[in-house]
Image: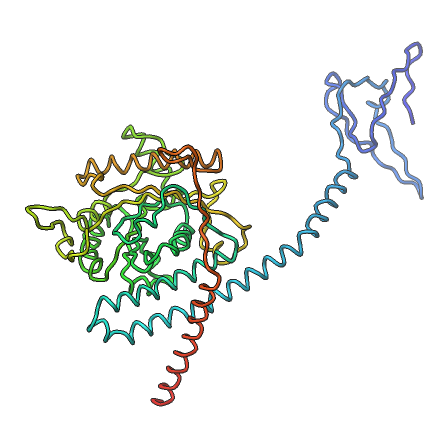
Length: 450
């Protein structure tokens, strides 16, 4: 039914509205009237109009919001479903590949690490007779183990591009490598890019977080002589004393040449806020891509290993044990790791390989040890300056996709690092054959005894 206007009053034009839209109410008329009651008589129903509805309808100027288009929503849903269906085979293959890689990694660890331990045990008489040869053989096996870890990333398409100075030139000298730390993948990246640097990996000592001691690789690092450092202010002084003692007992006695150190003391994402607050408090530069380094471990290493000449004799911690052919610690290598789009790779990605092939970039600079100050304040400033330069290097890389050229060069030169597939096949074959051999030997003695 339609309300009839009063006589003499022109009927206003009624605006059509969707059936589902609610009735509009004029502010002058007060609150919306209650809904009309529904009366049912037999099979018919009718609405009783309230008195408020008998008055002439008011012209409403409110605009209705546009209603959602069910057809458009349905189309978007179909597009999303089509994209999901198209990606399903790729996602399925990614899952299968990740499971296969994980299974291979487990098998690789189950044969390689126990074989390494068995070889070290069986070679203990050689350690007594010829310690230097024993640690040389142990270092070669250690390099092979790290080469297996590097191969996991290599076959997933995670490669390394090297920039700056060529560190092969100092691979036979003693050096300390200072590296920025973004994720667990930094260690895997170094394991890969140092494989082609002669015996560097075999004669290398790592300083890493103590949590790695409890991983599958922890026993190997303990045997090799790596140092596990516990983070935290309450442990700092104690850990530095332990580091000094560890260097005196293990560095030159095991013929170590290089030390890898992460001076930031933790991952970038965990330390950035604290580092920036410290920089603001002490009027230091505000860094985004790196954090301010800690100098405690660096100072201990330099004091223990640098061969300082005093009255014609070597001095300075472990330097007194230098042989006639050694010149002591000679170089500081500043290594800067950069990931495309500042998205670092973690150890899970390295193992499972679910990320698309990625090129990690590593920039090297070499500083003679004679240019590095040993006094605490001067060493702090020197380290701060190196990490400020790292910040500039990373900023340039993230803006341009390349590192800037070195001093004295007009263009930056990069070198693609590569691993030999034949070499990887041989060390993997040796690991699995060794695992099979030791399994049969242990099984034989077990049956003989029991």
